[in-house]
Image (cartoon, rainbow, N blue to C red; front, side, top):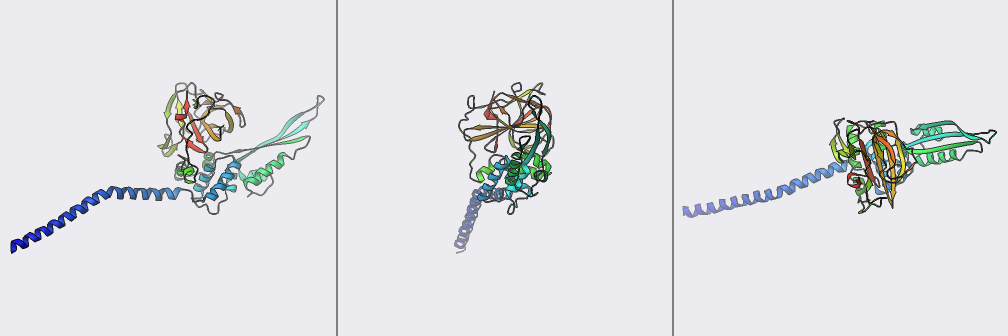
Amino acid sequence: MNERKGYQEYKKQSKKRKKRKLKRALLAIAMPFIMIFLILTMLFISMASVMPSVADSVVDDYKAAAELAGCTWQELLVYDTVRFDNDLEDVDPFLSAVDFLKLHYEKWIWVETDEGGYWQEVQSGDLATPSSICSWLTIPTESDIQAILDAGKRVSESGSSDVKWVIQFSNKDLEELIIKKEFDTDQIEWVDTLMTAGILDEMFGDLYDLPDYIDTTEGGYFAWPTPELHSVTSKFASVRIHPVLGIKRAHNGVDISGSNAMGSPVIAIEDGTVIYVNLSGGERGINIKVQHKIGDDIWISRYQHLSAVKVDVGDEVKRGTVIGGVGNTGIGTGPHLHIELTYNGVLIDPLPLIRE
């Protein structure tokens, strides 16, 4: 009787052991999936906290405002997202876009001579802050970008037979505004995160997808920007430790250098229009932007840390035109060209698309 009772107890304990083993086995199988789920949840929460909290209809306003300012809608949206700590409920994109504007003005008068006469410049200036632009145009300080552009047009049309005004609007770069607004390290990293790899485009429905073939003037590729330099010293990377600043930054372009790099010619990688020239420096040093319209797509190449510039805003350049010289202006470790490429506003790796 005792033997039978002992056997039953043994079977009972054996079943419990088997159940415990099965639970451990199932837990071991499920644990990786649980961990993946938790990691993805944490990533989702983390990314959600940095993604712009705006509706698609507001993004349409950002696109319209950015077109007026001459910047990309991604730059404008990122600028507001970071500086307002993602609280965009009461933010007007058409007011924010004014921060990207610069104004150059010239006044010319007609001087009569025995030979007929000529136009003489008597006044010129550059304005780079919203308040100074509005003040000069004699419009309210808090005017939006459309009001400013309309006022500039009125000044241009206010000339006479012997007085002529030249009004030219251009745009600041996002990097200029980051420096001007004194963004801290965390804010700069936030900007880099949002401006890299087409995140905003995918989030708001404009899928980032490079074309299978680029209809450039020669062979489907852009030209190599430094004919005399061929060494790639730093590649495109979403995150790296900045070699000078020592902080995490995206490296949104490619660095090219070589022996006797200083002053080596830099060429336009494709036919286009010079849309930006910065001679004042900053982190990127002396730099140039050239816009290339290819079919329905807009490409922008940017050449940084230059020692010299040989073009002006508005110049039409051909593929291979020398536009500047390699230098070491801005923040860098030596003479090199940093080239960036955007495709419809998205920063992409230029290296696979440029060819010697």
